[in-house]
Structure formats: structure tokens, C-alpha cells
Length: 72
Image (cartoon, rainbow, N blue to C red; front, top):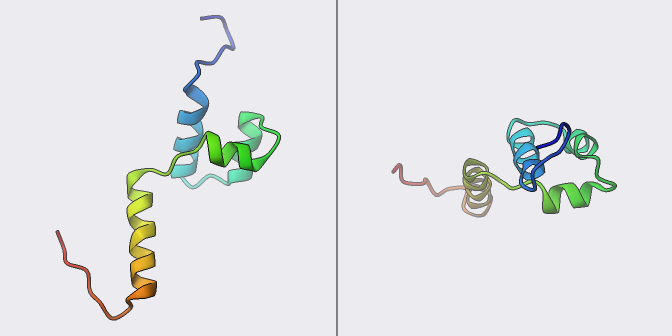
């Protein structure tokens, strides 16, 4: 691999790791040198399982505030 080259999956990995660690999405966009934030977030950043689970929990709490979730 030549100096400075990047494999096809590397931007997705970098974007996902930065996002999971709370980095500003605009900073991720600029580091990956994308023209728009939409390209960065829609194509190169995936939500990790914990983030998805937390998001789902928030929705449940908003819709069913009096219901307690069972601990598994």
C-alpha cells in the first residue's frame, strides 16, 4: 500500500469510531473531506449497537413514561 492511500472501508471505520466517541459531526465531515454533512452521516457513519439501544430506550420512555423496563 502506498503512503497516504486508504482502503475502501477505512473512512467508515474512522467516521463510526469518531461518532461513537462523541466527536462533532462537522469535524468528522471535514476530516473525511466530504462536501456535505449528509454524505458523511448517511454513507460513512453507522450507529453502534449501544447507541441504537439507548435511542430505542429514549423513545419507549417518551411514549410510555410510567412503564418500567425489565432488567435482563
